[in-house]
Each structure stands twice: as C-alpha cells, then as structure tokens.
Length: 235
Ligand code: PEP
Image 1 (cartoon, rainbow, N blue to C red):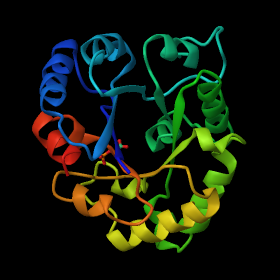
Image 2: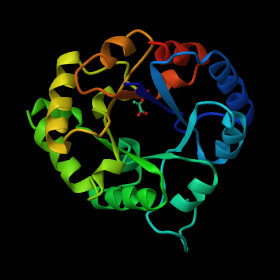
Image 3: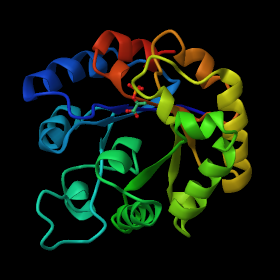
Image 4: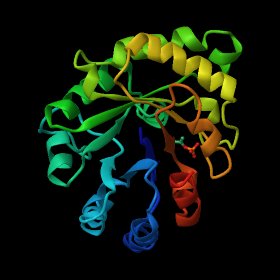
C-alpha cells in the first residue's frame, strides 16, 4: 500500500516559494510508493491549489476552526478550506497545543468539523520529553487519542509526533516508533493510517517507512526543499 507523505510548511513560504517548490515535485513525482499532501499556510492555499490542480498531489491545511462560521477573528472554517480545495487538515499539532492552548476536546471538535466537510483530519498526538523520561509516554498518548478521536474514527488519520523530536534533528528511534505505533494500532484497530512525525529527513525516511504500523510520515523542515522532499517521496 502507498505511504502517505504529508508536508507541513508551518509558517514558511511565499507565493514565489510555492511555485518554485511545487514545480519540480509535480514534474519529477514518479514514485508509485507514495501519496503526497502539501499543507501550506492559509494565504498560499489558493496558489498551491492552482499549481497542483492537474497533479496527483493533495492539498491540506494546518488547522481549522471547530465552528462553521461566526465572530472568530483570524480563524478559518473547515467549509472554507473545502472550497479552497483542501482534502486534508492537520489538527492538534503540538505547536498549536502549546502556543494556542488547544486541548483534546477542542481538537476532537475540529476533527469533527473537518469530517462534516469531507476533509480528512490528521490528528496529532505525542508526548514531551519529561513525560517520556518519566515512563508515561504510552499512557499519555493513548489518553490523548481517546480524548481526540471522534466516533467516526475511520475518517481520521493519526500522526504520532513526539514533541522532543519535532524540529530538533533528533528523530525517535525505530524501537520507540515501533512500540508506540503498535500501541496506537491496538487502540484504533485496522483501516486507520498512522503517520510518524519528528525530524524525518532524506536519510531516515526509508527506514522509518518500513517500520510495522507506520503508514506514512509528517514532514516539517525537510519538506521545505524540493530536492530533499523528492528524496523522501521516492524513499
Ligand atoms: C512537524 O512539523 O510536524 C514536524 C514533524 O516537523 P519536523 O519534521 O521539522 O521535525
């Protein structure tokens, strides 16, 4: 089965960057191994959608609001994301949990809003270093999962992203990943994709993608350079 490779550009990119980064990926994307989702910042969704229109790439957003519309300055609804061409949305990224104080209940509501608009939510979960060092990583992640996952869980994708591995250059070990993904699989059952995220790069992608219960990867920093991202896609 194809692996899902999700690019999270975070707060990076410009209109010119979008064109320059996507053009070679669309041109050279020959791998039958992967399905690709590009998640640019909101203002670049329209440009990215136009560039990707006739390609096999999918468009995703980095967040959505849980309400359909209203007085929520600065937020974006799932229905508008759908209109902009998104078929995926990341919810509950640890940077949103940290900087925007998002909790599991809110993340679940966002996932439901996405599903109601035929968008697949990519629900992020993961422990911080303190929790891992205290031996509570598995229980913490399973609690997050149980509180974030909507009833219609088959419409969701899970991304396990240990916080200590995000943007640090220090990916989790293969044993860490295998152990946590097995726990998540036992909890969610079959038929739900489980991604790993945290310092995935061109060197470690292939081995991470062969670990049991790893159905794809969520890539931050390494998705911002076409050459590197192409190597990951063609792992
Ligand atoms: C992320 O943003 O979800 C992420 C995993 O970032 P990085 O690949 O840079 O660690």
